[in-house]
Image (cartoon, chains in turn brown, cyan, yellow):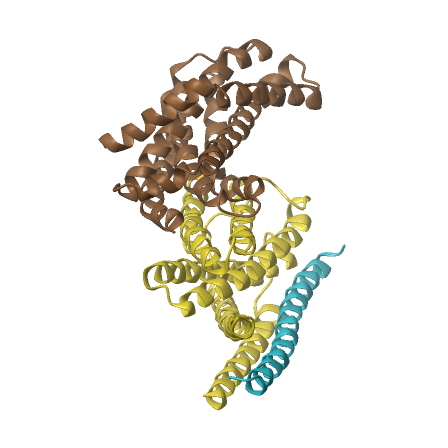
Amino acid sequence: MNKALVILWKDALSEFRARELVPSVLVFALLVIVIFHFAFELGAERARSVAPGILWVTFTFAGVLGLNRSFAQEKERGSLAGLVLCPVDSDTIYLGKMLSSLMFMLIVEAIILPIFSILFNLFVFMPELAVIAVLATVGFASVGTLFSALAVNTKTREIMLPILFFPIVSPVIIAAVKATELALAGGSWANLSSWLEIIGTFDIIFLVVASLVFEFVIEE
Amino acid sequence: MENMTYVFAAFAIVWAVVFGYIFSLSHRQRQLRREIDSLKEKNDDAPG
Amino acid sequence: MKGREIQRSDILLGLSFLLMIAALYLVFIYVPTEATMGVVQRIFYFHVPVAWVAFLAFLVVFVGSILYLGKRESKWDILAYSSAEVGIVFTTLVLITGPLWAKPTWGVWWVWDARLTTTLVLWLIYLAYLMVRSFALEESQGARFAAVVGIVGFIDVPIVALTIVLSRTQHPGPVIFEGGLAASMLLTLLVCLAAFTVLYVLLLQLRISLREAEVEIAKLKQAQSP
C-alpha cells in the first residue's frame, strides 16, 4: 500500500510542477459544456432535464482525455518501463496509477461542478451528488487505468482508449445520470440506493478484476 | 409493412447473414489453402 | 486427421439442418399465435435463442482468454478469437431482429432502455476486442491485449442481467423464467435454442479452422523471409 501511495505522490508532484494536465482538461470541459448549450438551445426548464446528462458527458470526456495524456506522458518519458523494472507487484503499480487518476479526475470534477452550477443555474452542492460522483469516478479510474496502459501501447492510442473505455463503463454512466437526476429532483437516499448499488458493485468487481489482469498489460 | 412481413423479414435476414458468413468463411478458406500450398512448394524448392 | 475433421463438420451440418427444419415447422405451423402481440411475436423464437447463444459465445471468449493468459498456447487464442467473431455475428442478429419485432409492436424501431442499450454496448465491446488485435504493435501483444479485453468485457454481461432484473421498462420482462410460457411455446423456444446452438458450434468450427490456416500462413511467411 505504501508503494502505491509513493506512485500516487510522484504523479501528484509531477503534475503540480508541470501544471499541464489539470488546466487543459478544465478548458476542454468548459468547451464541452458551452458546445452542449449551443447544441440544445437550452431554456431554463429544458436545462434542468438535460443537465445530469451533460454533466456526466463532460466528466466522462474530461476523464478520458486526462487518462490518455497521463499515460502518454509516462510512455514518452519511458517511466512506465522504469516502473515495471522496479521490484514492485503489478497490482501495486495498478493501485498507485489508479489512485493518481482518481485524484486527478476528482479535482477536475470538483472544479467543474461550481462552474456548471453557475452556467445552468442549478444548485448542485448536495452530499448525494458528491457520493454519486466519487463512486462513479472510482469506476472510471479503475477501468481507465487498465485500458489506458493498454491503449498507450497500440498504434492508435487516442482512439483505442475511448473505444475500449466507453462501452465498458457505460453502466456506470447510465446509473450516475439516473441517480443525479433523482438527486437534483430532491430524491431521498432510498430512491438513489438501487443506482448507487449498481455503481458500487461495478466498482468492486472492476477494481478486483483490473488489478488481477494489469500485469498482463504491462509485461514485456 | 404488414405484420407477417416483419416475421418474414426477420427470418430472411437471419438466414442471409448466416449464409453470407458461412460463404465468406469457405471462400477465404479456399484462398488460404491455395496460398498455403503455394508457400509450402516454395519452401520445398528453396535451398534449405 | 483431415478425414475425421471433415466427418465431424458434416455431422454438425446435418444436425443443424435438421434442427432448423424442425424449428421452422414449430415456429410457423405448430405454435399458436400469441394473444397480445399477434403474429409478430414469432420473432421471439429467433430473437431470444440468438441472444442466449451470443452470450454463450462471449462466455467461451472469456474462458479462452483466461486459458490463453495462463498457458499461452495458441489454440486458446484461436478459440477466443473465433468465438468473438461468431458472437458478434449473433449479436448483430439480435440487434436486427429486435427492432423488427419492436416496430410493429411499440411503433418505434429502437428505445434506449436497459436491455437494448446494454446489448448494443456488448456488441461494441467485442468489436473493440477485434480492433485491439489489429491495432496492437505485434501479434502476440495483440493476442494478450485482446485476452484482457475478453475477460474484462465479459464482466459486463452479469451487469446486463442485473439491469434486466432491476428495470421495469418497455422491453418484455423475464417471462420465460416466471413460468409465463405455454408448453407449446416452451417447446418451440427450446428447439430453436438447440438449432442455433448447433449452428454456433458449426460456425465456430469453421472459423477456427480458417484461423488456424491464417496462423499457419503467417508462420510460413516468417520462415521464408529471414
